[in-house]
Amino acid sequence: MIEKYTKYDHLFRHVKPHAIGGIKIFTQNDPYLIEQKYDEVTDEERQIWKRLFEKLIQPLDQYASKEYLLGLQALGLSSDRWPNFSKLSPTIQQASGWQLQPVAGFLNEYLFFQLNAQRKFPVTDIIRQSKRFEQKYADQNIQNRDEYTPEPDIFHDIRGHCPFFMNKEYGDFLAEIGKLGYDIIADKYGWGPELVAHNLKRLQNFAWWSYEFGIMKKQNDSDEYRKTNNDMDHEIYGSGIISSYDEVMNVVHCSRRESSTSLILPFDIEEVVLTRFDYSDIQDRYYVIDSMESLYTTFENNQDLFLFKG
Image (cartoon, rainbow, N blue to C red; front, side, top):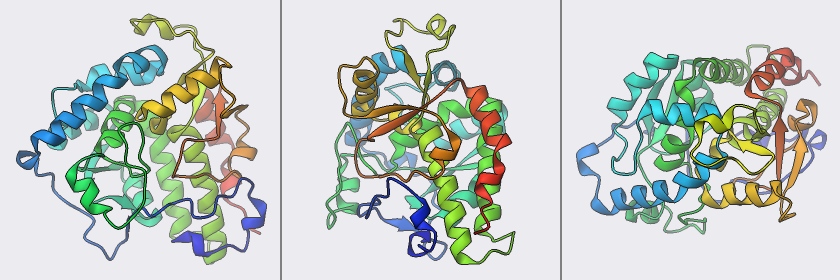
């Protein structure tokens, strides 16, 4: 884990101790690659998927980004069908060149970026609130509610992330992040472990505050793709928000100024890369991009921020 290297942590702000909060993390030494046993999915798990999916239908239709809504339609996800990785993966590959890679759970940085650099997205087959999830964390006190869990489960991976992979530009963007992350963690630049860890934390910060928990200004044409018009000033593209009902509604209430629980801040990439985060609870801030295109351009034009030399 890169967390043990802290020489340059004084450069970060918003540092959150113990941010991972008891989540089991798989390494190269663990049996992290799995095959989905689709025929062994229980009725309980299917009902959880259905309940989670249906609760978010209306909020996501009203507040998720156009890219998400179009991807969801193209991928054909529904509340009545448990995701079948072997069927979803070829559809995604045809759209953006990405494939789904079933894994046993939360992967360490090396494995995650290694897979992303190959246009492979890790997906888990376990769902929150299920007996399997409870057994996995029987000795840990982590949040495990319908509305939120810090463990990236199948609902987060498929409902939150996969619709975006139906968009080629988005797929290219994540592949570039994956390639840069793998180059950093493989120490392509000969920095040594402290600088590798620091630059990787910078990249993690960028990923967290963008494609995981990012929001954008309301786009002029987005309402054309909705059943209900968006009545706030922002729309959601972060997959961590999209897969959490509580997080969606927190964004809504903060955007409408009905709540001050979380800050809504302009996206400044220099600030973002130096701002740490917490896996274990609702986010206390969101950074606002102008558009998806502006995010792609900002990342492309600021690669030097992830190549800090000390």
